[in-house]
Length: 275
Image (cartoon, rainbow, N blue to C red; front, side, top):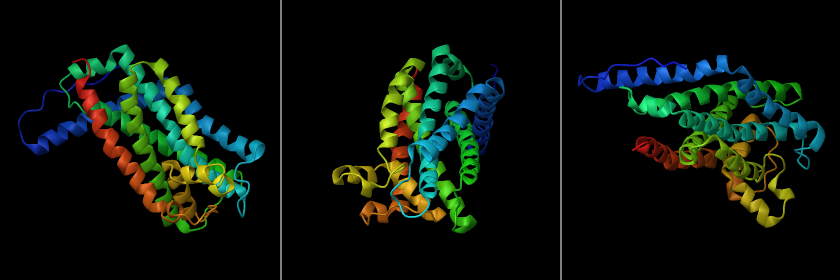
């Protein structure tokens, strides 16, 4: 592992400080991207795992049954939302590994903008998410999924998916710094899976007991899944509830609320490391 060092930015004004911040953040982003070339297996696993889930639920488990129209068109948008949430684990693992090796402590001792490490981590994760969405979209198309509302609506759906991912990665960064060790990622996985499956990713809330369906509809992942189905023009299994009727609004409000909570928590936790 190598990282370029920078000199301490002088008091040349806000423009100069912004320039140093961007330069340091780009250095940290390049460091994360360099790991892709050095650890291609990890990148491949992160790409293949959601594809395996999609194929399994399409051909073996039977996700999307009970909705009008092609069940694949119900399942694929939900799987795209699930992929964005499950990226939380990869974020945690990367951060805890750096913590365990003392890498973050060394970076914090260097003359660089303090937040550059977090920005680099988040930027690399978002690039990974774009790649995952591209792969999943291609596989979905291959198994029969289609979008029907044009390119603009499809781009809007992708934007909502990436917004969910951006919110979840800050949850991951914060929890990783709280956990401190890669072994603790397993404990988070135990929590992430139930939350992921307690959604409308695989089945419409109308097919569930009333109380469970109500809980499912208010899951942030359900809001994103329902919203992207609407934007793609896919069947959504609508129930007529307020949450279902305002899914696009909730698909924005939920991630924004999560970011508002976990972004400052992550920044504060990072600032207090090794104090």
